[in-house]
Image 1: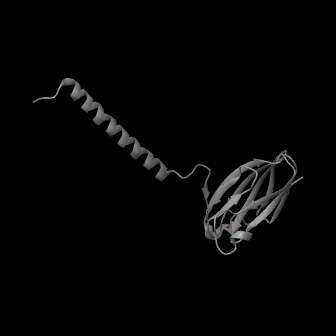
Image 2 (image 1 turned 90 degrees about the vertical axis):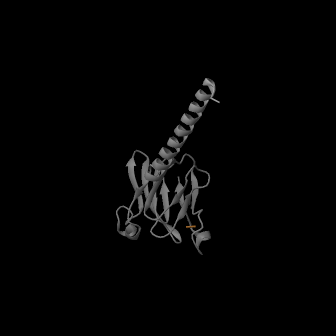
Image 3 (image 1 turned 180 degrees about the vertical axis):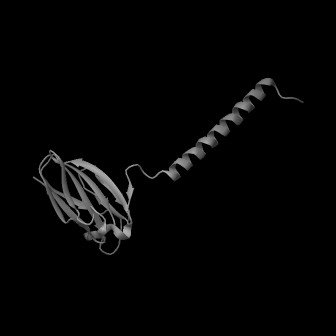
Length: 155
Ligand code: CUA
């Protein structure tokens, strides 16, 4: 018995498709394993409080009404404690942790990310409405997790 010509073609196509699929899987797994998320930088978690600019957390004016906010999230709080920016300010948050994984969320905005020890994670937001915005930790981080919060006032 011998295979029809069409059967041979279909077999070849099937084998080729499978090989391509496996190759893509390998490429994806490799790429994801090797490349950290694009907006992350690393510092030594044990040296966070000695590493500029996190040794002196706070707001830095970088534009007309634009600020870089260098912050640390730690058990159990945020530094600096309270911040204040003018109405309409764009704030680029750069946050890291010296101890364990925390969350950084500002309800009512799209700012919501994980803070991992030694990773500097960032997000930007333009505060177009005045008021007091809550900054809270939304990753369970220990006994004081519930009280881990601060505010940023916009006026
Ligand atoms: Cu920090 Cu929960």
